[in-house]
Length: 338
Image 1 (tube, one colour):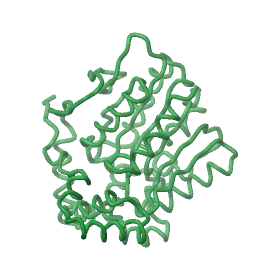
Image 2: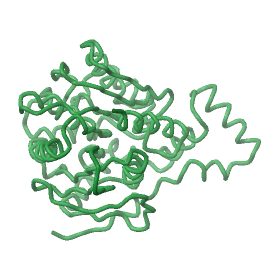
Image 3: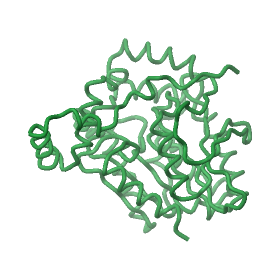
């Protein structure tokens, strides 16, 4: 299978700090007032949203022609094995493994380590991990000293949820057996978070124990996006658009009922989940369904924490902002607790 380098476009997002540095001091003060008073967020998060809007990331999901071209490109590129990005200043070791038939990166292998994280990356079931995913897992590995399993699960449009779950379940079996489920954290962002909770909902019937923690970042809780509040949140979301996401959802379902909990975990059995932590921004179209799913989990009496990123965007813990730093602190605390 041919190898490719991660696209230069993956490195596109300039840090919010560099945006800030280009703004004159007086204007920056006004910018700060806008950020804190209107949006209740840091200047860096406001600068990040401005960048998202200027670069037109949302257009690939909102415009039919752009989306079709994007889909064709991903159909080819998603069949290729990716390499670790060049020039990434990793603080931990990185190696590649084949685990139960799935190409998986292992970060921070140690001779003696009894703690592991399975991290499922997002990207609307179409995108390989970005440079921000790599930086995030490197940070979590370094800060927690855990070994991080970072699988490259099958992606749309040529693969479906059934293939992805088959591989991810196999990975979970291997890791849970080696470390013990109570020493494993299952974590993901965007559709990776969807797969993570979709897997957790199946563990009892598979005869497997729940992980010690289930950490969900901006989960796509309902693939149908039928919630009438989605339109309200789509209007302020600079990254996601319902048009393309519904198209992707149909491909990913591959004829299955889109209300199936494996596709829309908001409909699944949430009893038995333990130590759930969810991060969701209030300026993303996934917010209404993610909040609904969290409320269902919390109502069971499970230990569950919701971190609402007020005025923040999709996947906010992954980007270089003060809010992300605080989110990472909470994640590190959860992963390292005994």
